[in-house]
Figure (cartoon, rainbow, N blue to C red):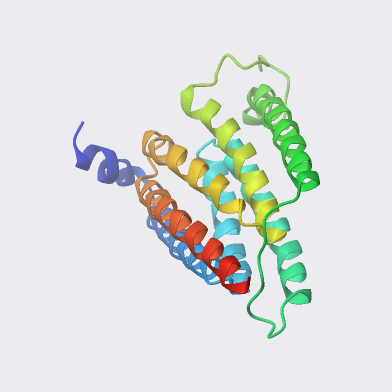
Length: 221
């Protein structure tokens, strides 16, 4: 399979609106990560625009886990926006730190609960796809392919990463790096070539973000 088949051909079946929405979501997503690296509160308004667009896009393509995570992103972005505003001296930038053992325990619990929740959603996916009718719908996980299972895992990874980011913890970047890297082949497989490139950019930016936040903490001490 060549690059045309991977990144261009799937879009032949999309409407101009779908392509425009994915492109806009990608641009605002990259802007959001850029502002996050800079510890700039604009990470949240730009991120909210991106996540709301992706809620629609991912639901349309059947990636329920990632669709749910973007709903969660939107809610957590509002929560993070409030937290960052309260902890910013200039209302723009914030200080960061490492997570405590207690926060790590909460993170592990959040990851486990997310695995259960998203797997449960996929279990009922035939019911959802059938217009929320049980007639003719066979519940189960038989319909999941490898991309769906990866979606379950990455959703849980991103849930924890977003929570750590709202708390201004440096470890959030580790979760973004792992999750973004996994999402690259998953999005190609699902025919979302633009989004797969976005996740490649996200992976590089997350590595830079981790280095930047670590460096800023060392400079404080």
